[in-house]
Length: 153
Image: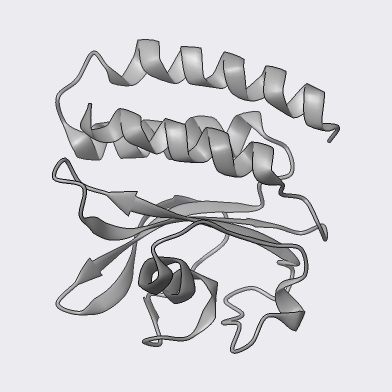
């Protein structure tokens, strides 16, 4: 998708999500709504979900798409890299990422955004996969980071 088209789509999605999620104070409901809207409004999103840290393990939480890995091997793959380095990762080709964890062989590119609680501590990640290579850009990173802030406003 062209970058200017992405900007417009994300702007509309952000407005829609703000109207939807800010009606509830329940963070789980907000997370579920964000995942559903993103997954169904952005056609290049193949798998969309949260991995949260529970007892030192990165465990799948709510998601949309094919069955996911339940627990990600510690310190391997894009999700752990984003968590450990505290930054968003945009990966054009997951097959060239060191120690990539392949939960579904149809995934070819990925974006992972650290997910913070109300205190600003990273408690997990938003993980989005695409079946196409090079689907994600800095536009996705900017907007997904902003959208995640809606969970704990």
